Image (cartoon, rainbow, N blue to C red; front, side):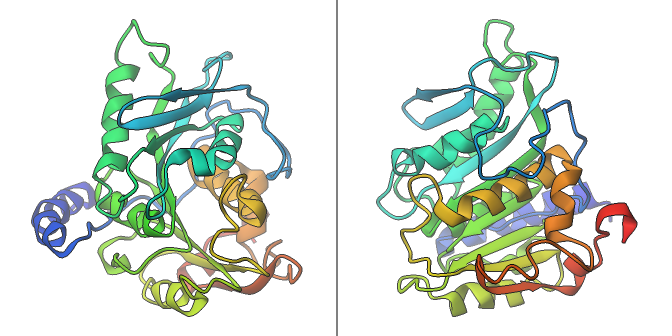
Length: 292
């Protein structure tokens, strides 16, 4: 069965069931880097501000973080849909979301404090589709709708995986994710992030989700010394790795390949950043720089 047809079948059959259970599933995506699309390189400065000035538009359902001038050289901007932790709003994570926008992403952050269903997150894609097609919109022709990622923290981390029920989502970054998700229902590349001192979502719980993801390319990173709130604000030590992952999968940024993939991957031996690190067999099969 063709992949897109299979995704639609899973989405249609499973969405209603999992909504009743209080979660939504994720769907498939290609496991290769996206086209570069003309976004400027930042070298390996993932944690430093990117080349774009940023604007923030706070609306009723979403808060949009985006380059102030979109597509100045004809580039289109990949999308990240964001889910908040329980009781939180995008402003709590504003510096991190602004950081991603400075690197050229359009971030559609759902304003809901209960994001686990990922309904509002996925609706952010619909909004951007309409605006990208509207000649009167500043987004007109500027949104790269072929390259979309989902990300979130805590409850929103589970929602980041759940959001990928939508076949338009290509990768997910669950940051200290809650348990109401099922990675068995997706095959998008996943970057699981835990905090060594997280007493709310224990690293063992995140590691269990990672281990249940052996059918897809998955990486597990446990940030040394991090508690459950260490990723709020500017993202702390979560900022650079998540930026590198999103740039690789959604922008095809080859500078980021070597920190995750290949036999000498840059993050693999970084004991100052990570108290735990692992890559499953499918992630290890992705070539590193130069096809290594």
